Image (cartoon, rainbow, N blue to C red; front, side, top):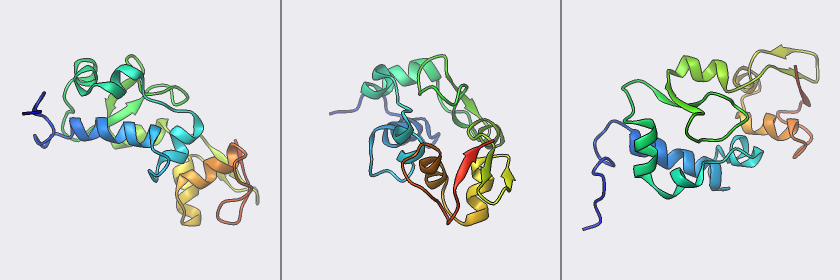
Amino acid sequence: MNRKHGLSRTGDGTYWAWQNIKARCRNPNNRKYPIYGGRGIDVCEAWFASFEAFLADMGRRPAGLTIGRIDNDKGYEPGNCEWQTYAEQGRTNYRAVIRSDGVRFESMTAAAKSIGRCQGGIHAVLTGKQSTSGGYGWTRA
């Protein structure tokens, strides 16, 4: 029997939060990889290797919260992560950007919605990996 922690099917989402941070940081085929692993955001080796280490540091996921990074430019690691509301995630994860036509957006989320694309394309423009997203150039505000 391979069961170690018994939390993958509890329904509280802790195990899946751990699986998702690993995927978006290390799997280039993950749709969110461009805005995480693609821009250098990683998960610490202890957490990558062990759900138990992640669980010991973060505890079980409280209902209605999601894993968030305190410093958006650092990775998923002890001391830089906390369980956050979705509203807190929206405020902290993306900085203001300016579209090439001069329109300013307070977040990449809002900018992406304006062009009907995901934030990964805008981030790819900001990091020099592509020249446009949604037909626009982008700069940090």
